[in-house]
Image 1: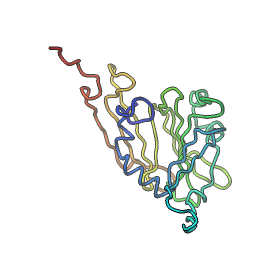
Image 2: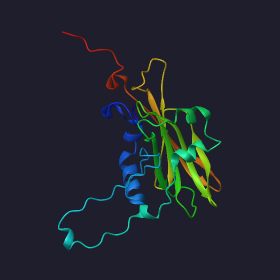
Image 3: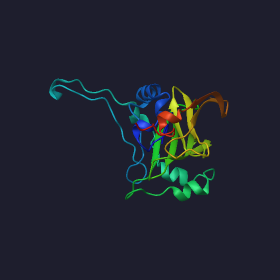
Length: 218
């Protein structure tokens, strides 16, 4: 899918084409890499740190990672216990292989709380299309759902303290890998809710995507 996970990487624009460098730098600055929960049991957070080189015996001790202070959650259990998540998303949230669930997780400061907020994206196993995006805020000893988007294809990320949500736009003639456009909405937390701050709309060329007419043969 263009703009989301899945499909030919050369054909995916959207989320990965719009603000990829910014989101990548942001994720690295906040948490030393994205935390992707497609691992065993659904918790599956994977830490990626900077590469190290040289003789280990001569190197200074590495600085502690920011991710060490993150209170990791079980995203599958969080979503399945959430009454705000639709039945269809819960029904489709199944392991792809073994105990590996199609769930992406990011931790970051979105709501100004004392603990990191949790962004959960639920994907499809076949083509990794986002079917639900949620933000959870720690309140007391529990996490509360403070944002949800369930119109696929959808994907949410943290960008310098803002929540950025991308959705694909299709016309009747569009095939799944080639949406006509993408809408990218930026939200910012104000008082006790996310408020829409900016909307960016990208239209795709049918000729470039492969939806245009076939070239004439000589």
